[in-house]
Length: 116
Image 1 (spheres, rainbow, N blue to C red):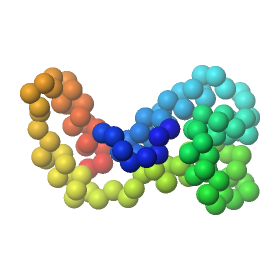
Image 2: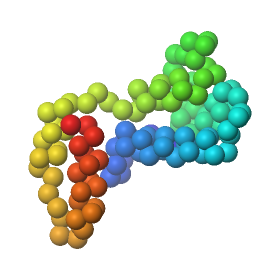
Image 3: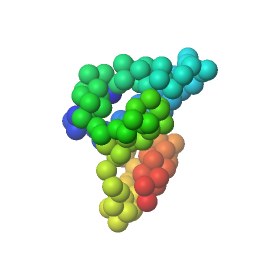
């Protein structure tokens, strides 16, 4: 997971994509495993910058070995508070580019509309 602000996508969007992939990976490869094992896999896969963020987080004793709590803590870290007015502006001003198909444009609009 890349926690830097560079590139075309925001940290929140990269987190959303990474989280979806990680949840699928845990579901497919670690079904039936303990929460503690899933947390260890999560922390290994997230990388060194993610582990640095984890080490700086304040986690209660009962949260340390729960995968859902770990996902929620990183969700809170990566996803800023949403300004609905700004999100609606982004949606209303989004226009189709010349090299963008209608399907790509509609997909982009649906992604933007999630935050409206």
